[in-house]
Length: 252
Image (cartoon, rainbow, N blue to C red):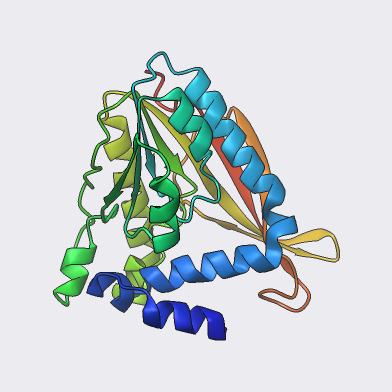
C-alpha cells in the first residue's frame, strides 16, 4: 500500500485523472498484477494471442489503434509494432513506464483521451444527463481493438449519478461505446468481460452481468480471468470474469 501511495503522490497527471481516481485505478491494477501474476497469466496470454490473431486476419496492416491500452499488460506491443506500420495506444493516461516502453519503437504513438466523453462534465461538477457518443482519436485505421475495456468504462462515472440510476447509466455508457465502434470504417476487435462470477468451495456462488442487458453475438473465443482469488477481495470467495473475444465484431 505504501508503494502505491508514493506512486500516486509522485506521478504527474492531469488534475481530473487524479481527482476522479483514474490514476489510482491504474496504480492498483499494476499492484494487483504483481501480487496475482500466476492467476492472471492465462488471461493476459490469451488476450495478447487473440489480438494478434485478429491482426493476422485483418486485410490491412497499415494502422492499428488499441483503446484501453493501460499498463500494456495485455497488449502484444512488440508483435503489433512489427506487423503494422503505425500503432496507436489510447487511454486516459499513460504512465511514465508506458511512455518509456513505447519510446523504444519508432512507429508507436500515444494518445490520451477520455473514452467515455464524460470526464469534462464530471470536472464541471455535474455529469451529463445522458452519456455522449464518444470520440476515439486515431481510430481511422485498419483495426481498432477495444481491449478489456467495455466492462470497466462505467465504474468511475456511475459514482456520479444517484444509486437508482447507476446501473442504467453504466449500461448506456457501454452501448455508446459499441455504437461508436460500429461507426468506424475499419475492423473492430473486441475483448471484454461479460459476467462476474463469485466462486466458493469450487462452485459458482453468484453471477453478475458486467454489461447489463446488452446482448453480444456468440464469441469466437471465450475464457475466464481469475481476477481476485481469495483472500484478495473476500476471505472465502474468488472473483473471476467471463471473457469473450471477437476479431471482427461488425463483420467488416
